[in-house]
Image 1 (cartoon, helix red, strand yellow):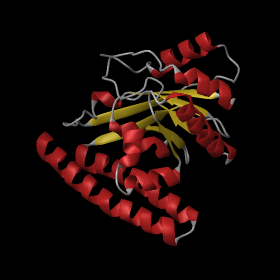
Image 2: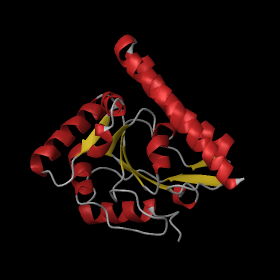
Image 3: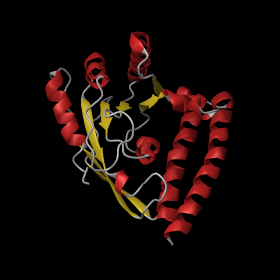
Length: 228
């Protein structure tokens, strides 16, 4: 049943995504902002529904986020956590690679929701633009989420943190909350397996911790579920 389940998931999720994105665009121009945000979150909820009922994947969350805006540093092994973030971090701003912002309509929705475009290797101007967007989002009382190792990595690997993580942590002045997630075991690039995906939310690290220490603590925490 593995292949039929995957085929059903891809058909249902991606076809449904087209209608949800169109509904988000309509809400963006025709409805209050709260309605637009609910439409965006419905995409994430629909993804969870498809995972549960078509793939047989359930979600377990260990720990809780503190109150107020925080800087979330999350492991990134698959598209799962990128889509599922609003189910773990309420109404988050998310650092996202620039290529995603070029997707027709989806990029518009992401920009208005609060994705912060990351332009790798584009110099200081791009960094200033990224930080300005991040501060605007945190100024609204929202949390920010980043994948500090950069792009998706395979389960069992521990690449170093990207150089920009510590700089953003310092400039934002927010507590950083590491989150480990083991989605790579089940939510492979193509063939997805049934089972349980676990989030583990760690204690917040206060602002002002020296760079070497905060990088070590975050790197260790986000890889806590990372077994080959």
